[in-house]
Amino acid sequence: MISKLTSLDERAGVDLTGERDIGNVLNRSGLDFEVEKVPMHTPEGNEVSDKYLLRRTDNKFVLGTCGKRYNVVDNEPMFEPFDKIVKDTGAVYESAGMLNHGKACWVSARLGDDFTIRDDAYQRRVIMLVYHTGLSRNSYFSYQNRVICNNMMASLNTASRKNGIGIKHTPTWEDNLQLAIDAFKQSISNANMFAKSIETLAMTRMTKLQAARFALRFFNDFKPMKREKSRTDRSKNRNHSKVEELMHLFEQGAGNEGKTRYDMFNAVTEYLDHTSVRKNVNTGRRFLSNLNGLQAGKKRKAVKELLA
Image (cartoon, rainbow, N blue to C red; front, top):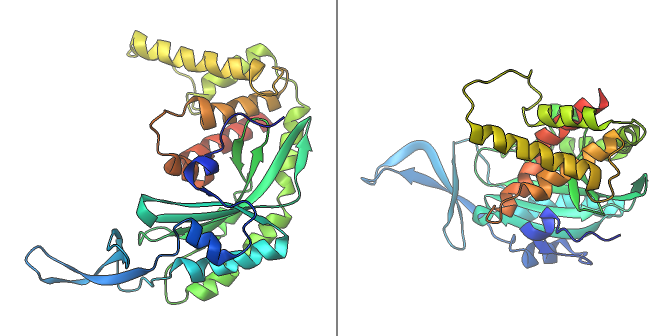
């Protein structure tokens, strides 16, 4: 069954299905711009010591600020090693895009080794994020899409983040890049952890009462439940509506049966990826949040609780 729900990467970027050349990938998605580092000045025109602006050379849009040690690395040399990973793993480019005029840029590719849990097909993808803000590291991720509902789940393995699969913009960025590539290749080979974890959930029964209790804890960020006398009736009703919606997805969400912890996992991802998304939400921000931000953290917490 093909999903009727649009995936976040489709909404946030440019469809590159069938593209093989990294130069065309960057050109078609608007990522073929260059960045420059220029001295920062006060309103009176005085140069600020050891402070610089990062801006695009084509339209002079300011992307961020940095210090003396920050090394500008354009998209092309940063994405070229990712292109090698794509070719080495037999992956196929799918989409690319940017956030805030190029402060964050990303390219994703689909791996060939899909897998199935119950009757659900999952597609595996790899993605690289490049930042030009002067703050964040460039990073590699792997994530999975559940085809029936286009839910997005970043890798459950947090070891990669602890080991620093990221590249700082310093004069030694090329050495760090090679270390990151080696670690990322290892994370790809260990990606079956996700399938094993979700398979466990599919075999674990969950009653309606257990699901309702989980839903309450989920919207309380899994903190100990306390009686809050100060909460208004409006706040209580809003929280009750969220629980009811999650329970509805547990029982009747795409491909769900309302019988196992896997159904609740699907309910959580569908709620976060689709149901709770406002119409005017910035899809680019939402996409990044699902990779390494708040949304990804919520999903990891939910899976950890469901596996407990």
